[in-house]
Image (cartoon, rainbow over all chains, first blue to last red; front, top):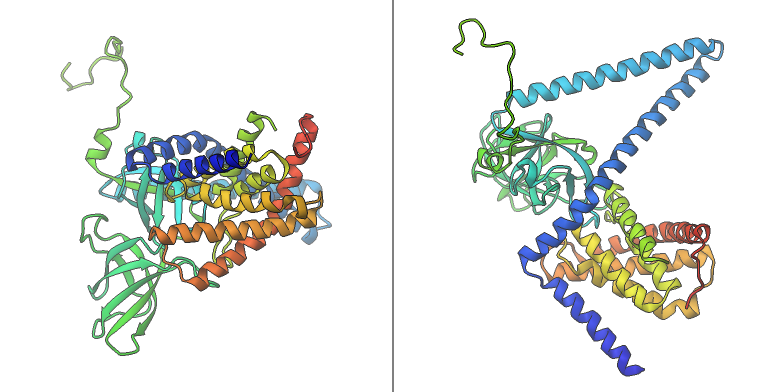
Length: 297
Length: 166
């Protein structure tokens, strides 16, 4: 009986060791398959959570109105509710217009993605996007929102991509202070007890002109991030104890804690690998309208 | 617990763990949904089921994070092993016991994971930060594990597949 236990323990140990030492490609395939399998459920859950949030917001609104306007009739409450919904729709509409305008302004090809999850262990600051290699998303691409840079893609499966957020200590971005042109590298601070996620720009020369409120943008050096993307603003500047260099603390421009959408800056090469959905060659499209005036047939 | 039921809870646990943001306080520990499922099996089912569940739950958790495959499985085996060792002396069908147990095992799981990630050079947290995070995990484990135990047990009873510990 004791021998069997030892054999079982050894077998378990071997399985775990084998899992931990899988070749990188095999490990990626296994992880990708699990992630792709779970991603539809994550998207549904995320959608459901948003719906619930909207319902609660709506109910809370009605409750407040009822308290404030007890004398008003039900119809007025109903009409106000309708009005609020219309405003919500207007706000959403405006947000969509802004996003569209942003996409049209940006020179790179952008793949719009929805955030469907976070790192399941909490050891890394990551967000999971609902699009992957099949939509033209590749590893090491900048991910942005209309507010600014949020990070870069680190792990891409067929249908999902993980974004290493700016606040993660292993995410480093080459940046420039927009006002003075001072260069530096920003790294995430992770989450410290009692602190919000933030980034830090270390080893800035003691004579460099860095002030609170300065805009920090990507420098384009290194080629990973496109030049000129807003990273954040300088929250405070500290001189090193020995007076050798300065450290600038950066508040990220995008709200990393409440991400809903993101755009992956894809290259032409990334998108070229995506198979376009063309009609089969044997289908002939019959254009009844014929050529336009002045257009060659 | 049928195979289907087991898979259901693993998928739901993994999805919830990736959907619910990590707790901002006490070192940002994640809500231990998957660990809760592993502990439930460790406490209530045969040991061989526990090993299979721990390995599968580890696979799911690592796939949904940047951790190398096998790290979470190792952490779950340590935490669940602790549960297996203590269940005869410790466990009664009470929420308060599940609470203490959840706290102890969540903390052990986080400690093991921290050790493995540090050995691989993947996290740069200090000893104090890891201890703080273990304390945070203990708090979340104490809250979540009794709830999960109740939910899984309730579902098993409703489906008529509840069986006593073997």
